[in-house]
Length: 155
Image 1 (tube, rainbow, N blue to C red):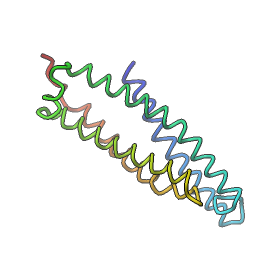
Image 2 (image 1 turned 90 degrees about the vertical axis):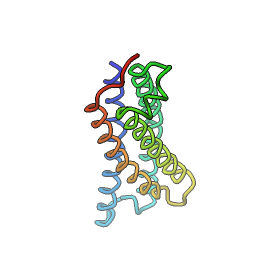
Image 3 (image 1 turned 180 degrees about the horizontal axis):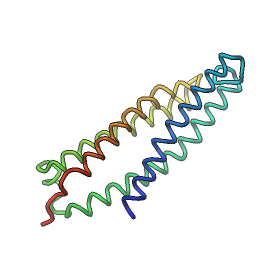
């Protein structure tokens, strides 16, 4: 159940962000044709509202992903051996890499949120959001690698 919650929330986070960015791109294309895309005042406000709505949901998803991931990892590694196993096993080193990548994603998400709030053009948040999607793709690849590695030894 823990893995299911983790994977569903991760899919919603990455997929939701990708969907929002695709909508913004479609609005930009519509704007080029004379529609109310992000280049117009109404389109910019709608795009900012869409990114802001996603950001609120993403915070909750990130919290659930972090809690379920930490809980799942600690369940596999007894408390007294966590630090040793993080540095001496392939599983632990890969898990550390995933944690660093997720931290980078969190920083990119924070940058996007700050740009969304402070910039004259809130759609400037698209740049860090695009980078966030790319790094999330790498996180998914590292997660796949984790499933192929042998679990740490339980002493």
